[in-house]
Image (cartoon, rainbow, N blue to C red; front, top):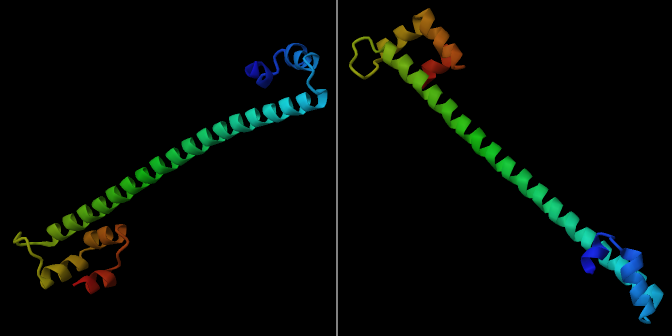
Length: 129
């Protein structure tokens, strides 16, 4: 019966009329059912809003996780490029970069361009040493 009231199926004919015929106050019955319907609608809306908020929060967390993965990939790519750059500058392939090799690297236009790709100026690279 309360489901019928919440969906307003047979609201007036079957439910309210029977209660009024049984001797309940008409105004009390009407307001009781109005309050009941209001509470049901309020609860249904709250459930719908909760589902929406949950879905939005989940999507935000997934987006944030993807953004962090992208930042990690970008950092690794940056480190890989720097490693390649210094390995190319290591002329004697000793695994270490001497100051002379470093200075020679900065004088080569191709290596300077690679530094600029990494948004490092020659003067900043010199400060690294």
